[in-house]
Length: 202
Length: 202
Image (cartoon, rainbow over all chains, first blue to last red; front, side, top):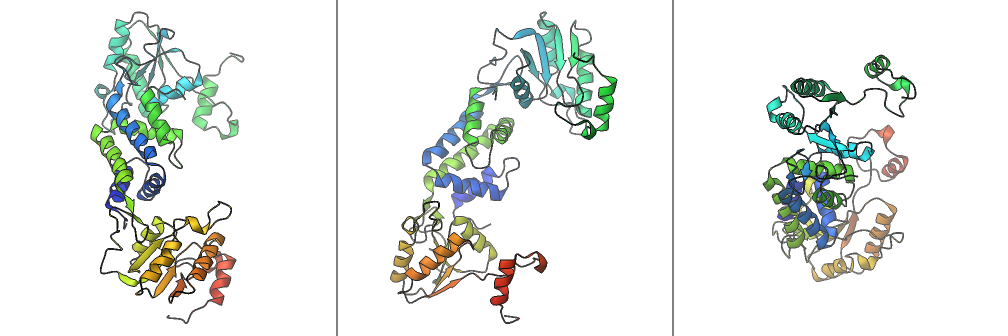
C-alpha cells in the first residue's frame, strides 16, 4: 500500500497488530483520528498507557484490578462461602451482568489444553486449592467453565484436586437455553437436558 | 456492564468512540492488550500520539503529509501537467496502488452535499482554481470523484469554475468493472457503457 505519510504508515501498522483489525480498517481508524480534535487521540492514547501500566491482577482471585485486592474480593457484602471458578475476565463480567451471583470468583487464566500446550501448572489451580484450604468459610466451589472438551477436562481435574477439601463442588446447569426453540436445539444438549430434567417449577 | 477495573472501563469507553467499534469489541481489544507485553501498548499509544500531533496537510494538494509539501508534490519524477482531483486520502492511496498514474493530486476534502450542509466554500475548490492559474504547466485536470449524485454535482461545479482556465478537464471512465459478469452489472452502468462504447482494442 502507498501511504501518504510515514506516520500514517506506522500508526496503521501498530493498529493492525490488534486482533481482527486489518490494514484497511486500521487506515479508516487513522483517517478518523486525523479528522477529530487532537485531544480525542491524546485521551485515547493516555487511556491505553494507563490501562497497561497501572492495572494489576488481584492477589486473591487473579482478576484484572486497579488495586492489589479487587473490588469484588474487597467487598464485605459479597458471600465469602461461594467461589465461582471461571476461565477469564469476560466470564466474570458476563456473570456479574446477570445480577444472580453474589459470591467471590477465581480466574484460572484459561483451560487445560494439551493441543495448545497448556498444562494445569500454567493455570491458577494451585492458588485455588491453597485459597480454599486457607479460607475455612468456603462452602461451595461453582465451576463455571466452558462446555467444551478442554473445559470438561479442567472441571474434572479441579474436582479431583479439591477432593480432600471439605467443600461442595457444583457446575453450571446444562440444558436448553432460555428463549431457544426446541427443534433448533442441538441433539447433545437436548439429550442431556432430558437426562437431567428437573421438577417443574423448580 | 460491570467492569473489573476503572482503568479497563475508561479504556473501553475511549476505544468504543472509534467508528464501528462497540463496547464488546473494545473490551476484547483491552483484554488482548493486557495479555501482551507492556511495550506493545506503549508503541501503539506512541504511534497514535505522533500521528495526531506531527502529521500536517500538504500546502499544495491538501493530502496528509509529514512535511509542509507532501512526497508526491515534492517528487520531481511526477508529471506536473496532470492534476487528479479526488475526495479524500483513501482515493489517493487507491489510485497510487494501481501504478497507472504519475501526475499530481488535489484533495477536495469531500463533495458538495446540500443535505449534509457541505457547500463548495468548505471544500478545497478555491485553492484548486488558484493552483491551476498559478501553474501554467497544468494541461489536464482529471476528476476522480465518486459516481454519485453529490459527486456528479461536484464535478460539474468544478468544471464550470475551471471554464476560464486553459486546461482540459477529464473524468474517470464509467463502464462495466473489470472481472464482472455482464448479467450482474446494474442497468444504469450497462446502459451508459453501451452509449460510451469504445473502439475495440483501444
